Image (cartoon, rainbow, N blue to C red):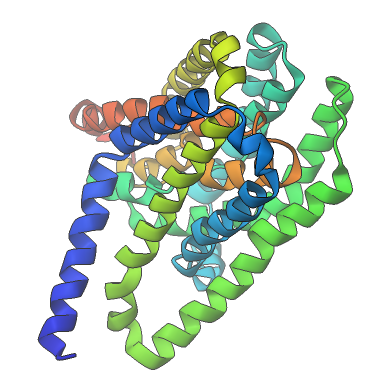
Length: 340
């Protein structure tokens, strides 16, 4: 294959990745609708082939998480020493403010223990797949966004079991802690190690520029795998969701309230804390958007597809709100212009 052919394929990958990101909401809705409709038409098939769907889910989970980890540059993490405030603020929002707000929202709106667990699970895994992309569109500080994402993600395997264990006591939910920790190792730590090794190998063999050209491929695989998993979740739980359709309405209310509160208070606190506009945009999307793909993976492998429902539906409302925030870039810039 000639260099020209390779360049054409890389260009095609970039266009595909941009297209999927642009229509992420639409494809999520299609995956949900397709899985739900087929599940209602053939309700007994997933029950009869449970082992097949379990194995397929494991493969899809790996195909979703592993490419994401290749794109994660762990080497950026030590740079926090230079200017730690924005990153520390993101940790404050994700692991202190978010659990408090989520706790009260769950207490008020959600009475099903499995759904409550699913809400906490997705809310406690920050960093949507598009958070850095949103930062770039808003002309925010990409380096801050990248470092903050890396550090938040590295802390998740250590903090998440503590939060979930506490939740289990509060809601008398049986948390299979051993299975949960093993799942985190399988879903986060092992792919993180393999992803870092793959990243280093690709940079060594293809160079930094060659690796950057492959990044759209990794993000595309992650997004397509996520759509497939979302479809499978709604396929396997189609009849149950039809009976409990109110769950989706409740999830919409909880997500909208959460995002409205978080976007408002983070914008205000960051200004008061002395962050400039670029730094603010470097952490706002990371601190409000959730990594639903990782939450879905953990929910399915450690618990059940029902626990994954909040993570599967949250992107529908998350995307609308975060894109809406992008439309406020001009007034937010004016709000921050006097920040030193």
